[in-house]
Image (cartoon, rainbow, N blue to C red; front, side):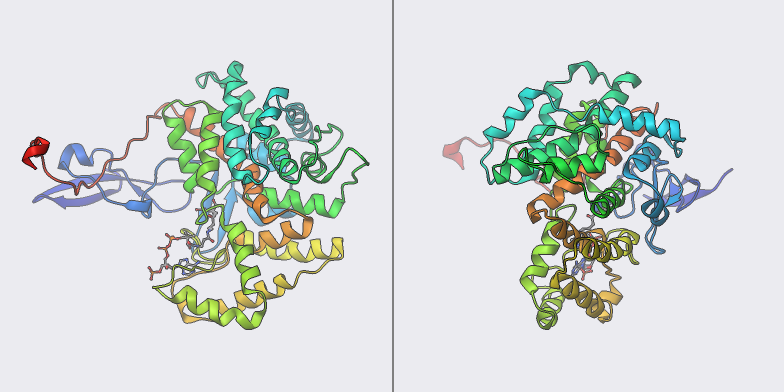
Length: 427
Ligand code: SDX
């Protein structure tokens, strides 16, 4: 008999199999628990729940480790490219030069949007939040690509996966252009995935746009750092939407909606707004006290994480990238000093030490994006752009799992027991 976990419930003993992955915590397989005990488990927020098997990304929150298909995020950020990491997440192995060139060519040739989709933007107010536009336009993709929404067909899944990865930069860049009243630029197939995005965002028809290599490299690295992250809230949203058989475009739109929240992907925008509100380092103690005050809803945005109880390895790379971008653009932002000082003070404060609150991926990213020229409202849209490959890879992994079934959690019911209807004159 393999490893078992014993549970005593209702005066009876039950044994449940303990399953082991390749690395990381074992799981107790409780799929038969309700049938045998008549009880549910209770785990709001899923702090102790594994929702699926996955071979894509491994996180060790205590050690601050993040692996994509076994490769440490620091090595990928240093040596790889977003296109190569996208191939790795989708296919499981690093590509050969030929495979990478072929993948790059395929993605490049899907970057254009159906011309009628571009008219969707005109329906939004100019000051619409780019995430509102992303939710709408990505969901609308399912109205244009009927030829690749049979999710049972692996060829359809591959085409719609490539379309989503390829079109997100065009959609995000157009959302920015629309907000500043500038014309959209079509993709330029002679540029890299990230260079093309920068040109569609910051280029204008009136002159040539020159991609700055150091900025292209920093942007590409930021995309790598955001590509995938195990079963986070938005990825779980995509999986749950996909479990009903919804088409991939609708599932990714659901993921974008979930990512928008300030507790999740919206934290990068909130973190920079917080640093702007703090302004000078002398005001940091006031905000540290507010973050510790249970009666104050204020939290240090960009700090803390459900899984990392150590430094988020992505934040380490992000902090290093700030200096590279400042040097390349010959800029400086006093908010970086404020951020460094805030981190230093927080990490020496007993509250943050005891609760193991460290900077996460969102703490420094806004400083880089702001230096490159993005408004804070675009930060989460960039997160969604990069996370699309992770969402799509996780969706493919789920759909191709023969054991996959619709996700349908239960509840602890606390409402009224059955009672009879009373006519209004009897109430
Ligand atoms: C992302 O899941 C992922 O992988 C997400 C992500 C990804 O790549 O997909 O990594 C991206 O979303 C990063 C997180 C971005 N969010 C923020 O930076 C927002 C600020 N952080 C928090 O709101 C919070 O830390 C969460 C939401 C990130 C995690 O919250 P948990 O795991 O539910 O923890 P919790 O809210 O129960 O906090 C534990 C304690 C609480 O105090 P007590 O009730 O135990 O007394 O720590 C406190 C919290 O009040 N706390 C904070 C804090 N974060 C947690 N106190 C002050 N400032 C903070 N930032």
